[in-house]
Amino acid sequence: MAISKVKNISYFMLPTLVSALIPVVTLPIISRKVSLEEYGVYALCIAFGTFLSGLANMGLTSGYERNFFEQKTQEQQGKLLFTVVFLVTAVCFLLGFFCYLFSPIISLWIAGDATYGLSFVLGYFAVSISSLKLYFLIYYKNVGNAKSYAWFSIDEVILNVLIGMFLVIYLEMGINGLLIGQLVGASLVMSMLLFRFLRTLPFGFSKQLMKNCFAISLPLTPRIFFGVIGTQFDKYLISLLGSLGGVGLYNLGQKIAYVVFNYMTALQNVYSPKVYKMMFDQGDDAEGKIGQYLTLPFYISALGGVGLALFSEEIIILLTPASYHGAINIVSVLSLMYVLYFFGKQPQLIYAKKTSLTSVLTLASICINIAVNIPLIKMYGGDGAAYGSLLSAFISSGISLWVSQKYFFIRWEWTKILFCLLSIFLFTLIHIYLRNMGIYWPFRFLVKAFFIGLFIFGGFYFKIIDFKIILSYLPLNKFTQSKG
Image (cartoon, rainbow, N blue to C red; front, side, top):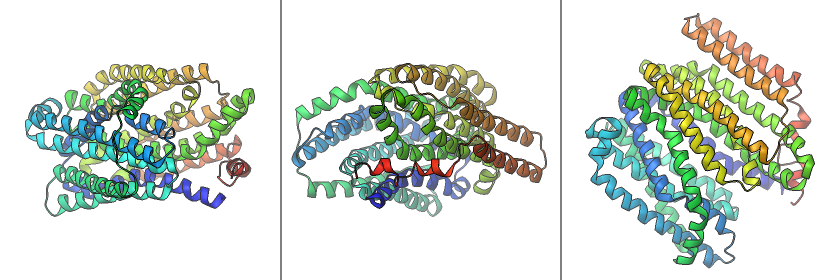
């Protein structure tokens, strides 16, 4: 039973890690075939597609996942799945028609050039069709079919890369090749899923099931809407106030730094079930035990973040040509920002049934982000967006933590947490300063290696790292076997 749980966790973590690493691995090819300005347009196309497809899905992923467990028969489960997928598909293609109709205007408005209209249409359909796949993956996750969940997730990433690279390298299609690769990859995987599910689940449509899903999903739509704006609007601000090249640099830095967030999310998939169990089962004792339990995951997240922040220079230089090297400091700064997101990933408000507050907090975060970013982007372009995002994340995370603590108090081990935060910020700022001053690289490399060693030593000194503590997080411990 324990081995089976380890395999299931591995299958659920694998797609997250592969999705984060493959785009980084392909950078040496893409960055040499696509100019920095075109890469900025590509980033805007994906951001636009993410925004519009988020509206098309209307929050139904949450409604579908929640209502799935109310369906007791396979017939009802199939009817719910196909009802939701049919509706979302119809809305996606309806919005896609208007996107195609007004594509030159959209391109001119977002990229400042009407000639990229087709690229925005391709970006929208690539993201939209990929979003439809999520409903089938949720089905696999809910029934515990981790292997199918993993392989259908990974297949799309691999297909996107193979087709996109062929179109970019051999047919020299530029960013349209990348977008067509994603569109074809998503369509092939979607077709395979549809064929497979139509063979195993009865097809059906139910207005009542649709209404039940909307009752859950529509109140979440503002949060999703604000969330997409919060993650994508900075690119539009850079194109508006800076340049397409600045968008390209920022997107590159964000893509590499996002490995920290994906790494943290994969880690969360392991520890979050125990956090929930302690919340529900341990009453007043939970606040202290959860705080102690979360220290090690935060330390590991911070170690990953500071490692990427310090060695961003080596990664960028190895992966990209000189025109992309302006993203080095952006990677460092955004890596710190994603570490701060650790506190916002804790389920305190969900446990307290205060999910409506998440939309309010998300909206507040967007307002702070825009207010901070506008002057910094005007002055410093992509670098300004990175520093602005870090500053706004620091403020927003503080507010979110303060609100969450009111509804479920966690007694954090602040001495250890502050050691981690102060260390990674200080080390990264010193690294950026030494690089900007032009200090000889071998000396800087030794300093960075010393910082990593010092951070690891601090983990032992503050007793964050301990063999017995690490064992408690593995799925072989007594907790995970309690029901097995």
